[in-house]
Amino acid sequence: MAQTGILNGTTLLVYVGGTAVAGSRTCSISTSMETREATTKDSAGWAESLEGLRSWSVECDGLYAQDAAYGHEELFALIGPTRTKSTLTFATATSGDTIYRGQAYCTQLDLEAGVEDSASWTASFTGTAALTKTTLT
Image (cartoon, rainbow, N blue to C red; front, side, top):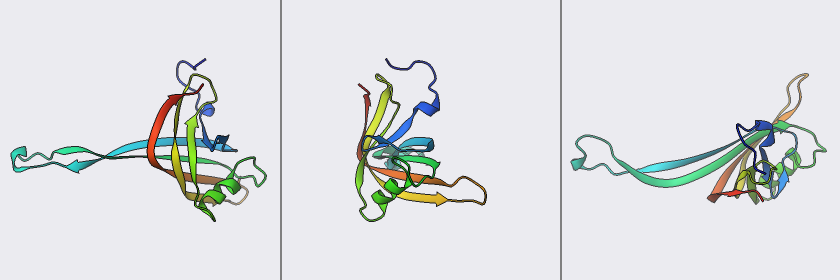
């Protein structure tokens, strides 16, 4: 049954190929649309625009553990040696909830380790082609 009311952000996860990214702390999804110039001499001095290309991206970060079920090491394999396109899903695990899914490339992966601080990672994904919105069954 779908969740109601304001979601607890803890329930939203990033899945790569159907597996939740381990150790995640935050995640976000962004969609945008560029515009194309449509200003003419008839525009009375006002800029006019029309719709253009749409794009989407996902970012997530988490705590670094070398033995994580699906963490930094697996994300590195997507960007490092293989440059693999993956199915990315941004969703909860609750049946009936909205999910966003599409093909994406891991375009940036950072690993940070401060003095006496928990090591952490940040990953960025850039979508290629359409992002779909469906319901988890």
